[in-house]
Image (cartoon, rainbow, N blue to C red; front, side):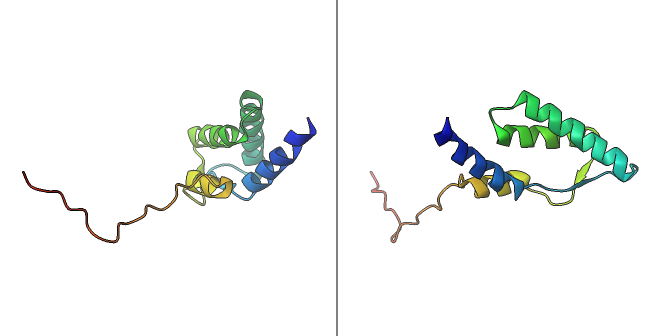
Amino acid sequence: MKPLLAPTLLLLASLSACTASVTHPTKSEAEMQTDIDQCTESANRRYWMDPVAALYNAYDCLEARGYQRDRGDLAARVERALGEEPPPRARPKEPCRVPCR
C-alpha cells in the first residue's frame, strides 16, 4: 500500500497547480463556495479512483450551473502537468520522394 501513496500524492500535488478559478456573475461568494463544494464532493465520490476524471467532472458540473472559467484550456494544462503531452513530431531532413509508375 505504501508504494502507491507517493505517486498518488505527486499526482494530487500536480493537479492542484492546474486548477482554474470559476466565477458566476449573479452569485455571492458564499453561494459560489457552496456550489463548488457540492460539485467537488460529488465528483470525488463518483471518481474516487481517478482524480483527473474527478477534476473534469467537477468543472463540468459547475459549467452546467452557469459558471465560467477564468483561465481556459484546463485539459491541456492537466496533460502537461501529468506529462501526457504527445511528443513533437520529427520532421524528415529531406522530403519523401514517391516514385511514379
